[in-house]
Image 1: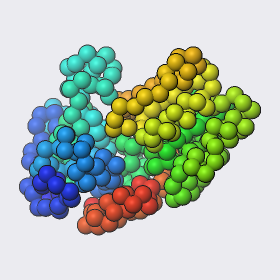
Image 2: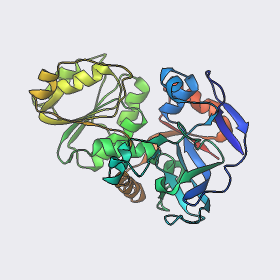
Image 3: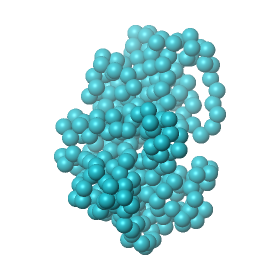
Length: 343
């Protein structure tokens, strides 16, 4: 089968022919991949940056955002059957640690990640444990089904708080930030403000329903937000950019007693005045990793099934698997929303 693989400890990826994964074990599922989308972490692996060097052990088939059809199942599999239309949770939990046994599999202490710690889904077939397989509603378009995993990030981040009637600030409008705008709007947010510095992504924010888009390199974000909120600040701040400055600005403009959800990754130690920006303001801060298994998936599936969210506004490019290099170039230039590959 064709597979996109990290073959060496250097920049780049290689399309190779490798054997199919083989018969699934008793609790495993073999899936024929139909669509897969490129994630920022895949770009890190392509570039072979410090994170990739510390985590990836070539040779490895990468990729973790995908949808497909169940090809074969192990004898003990009960959750899906051959022919089912599925997507998968990226986080593979151990099922035995304290977190797994107390309904917190998404923060398993022994977590493995598909396409990072185990062979992934940028291949014609992928084999996974039944624990992570999600049977999709048939109404969800396969193009959007591969985006269920990052869409789950947007849902989990946005819904740490009841957004009904709230003023929400989202910093960083990549694909997940764009999806979070839609989630906030459908969840009843009164005003959604987006903070973004790239022209392409400012347009993406408006396309996905942001009421106000602020470029903090061109105007004073704090002053604008305070004027928009009559000096109160935002009720909920969703940090998705990974920018230290964006984090500090967002904390400043979050109202006393407000809520902050941090999905962005900073890749280094950061410092700010916790007393003034968090403690004295009595902020609630949530660190977001992945999706709640499977609470978030139920919400995401229903939002797409009933067309409350339109991912055609986020998926900007659909290409063939053979065009993978073009997809990665788009991602590295930042000139795209979500890029989906069809198999």
